[in-house]
Length: 368
Image 1: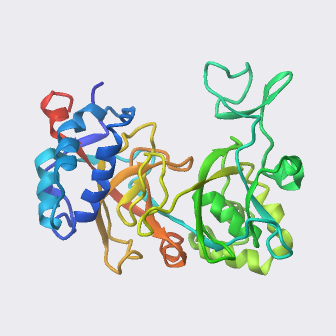
Image 2: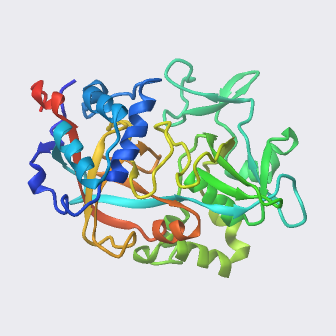
Image 3: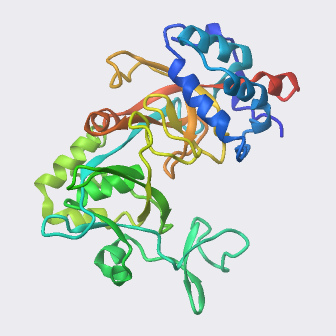
């Protein structure tokens, strides 16, 4: 598969901030993917970055670790060549942020904890070209099995009104519907249980409908100026307008189902779409239809200072995806877990330049 013209090879000297970035964390994130591909290789994205071309880099990463940032930088320079990623449909690339919420929860419904997180229903079926009924929206990747065939699954409003209430699908209960919604948005959470233990839930499936963010809705109806839409401003609006929470949230028809997941290393995030734990500040969600998981991206955004007070210039590893992450120069930066990470992720919406690090064997093969 030839490389797409979206990639324009450049030199490492052309990367703004490359030498100032300590890439040891990026190497450790890359190394986790290097071990995962021994179980199941990543699919090659439509832009032509062949997953097989990572073989030499993955092998070295598995064989030995890097002792410091300088060794990590040398590793990436040996195995990769940077290429500017041309944005599509806008003058620059775009980054947003995501995180893993940490919230109080209960294993059973109580007077305080009344909002359930649900496991995957038995009648939820994956849909693709092989079983999609004629006329069904091609966007839908999930549907409901009925005696008469597959139909669109219940949406958020129907589920929250009780469409699945009698099925015993609840795996945990939260106190606040807004907290629960943002757990849905992030796709994972750490749950602080009454006995002091920490549980993690992560994405298992979704009802299938398109995601519609509350920020866009509130901007459209004139409640919050679009330039001021952040997670923090959305939460503040809901606190001031509790009687309108359902009205706004039900306009997002998509509903997420969860499963329990271990917390093996508290310093890392949940296992995401690339099947490895996310690394705070080093894992990025990309458009998985276009890009190949495991690809390193150097992302530069002078206007983004939320992570450490400095203009953002970091090497990130593609290890997740999301329905809102579409386009070649579009990324969602994983900020970590808990409230502090949420404060960072909630304000990230910045123009950025994307530089993919392409495996040298891919370029040597004449695909560039």
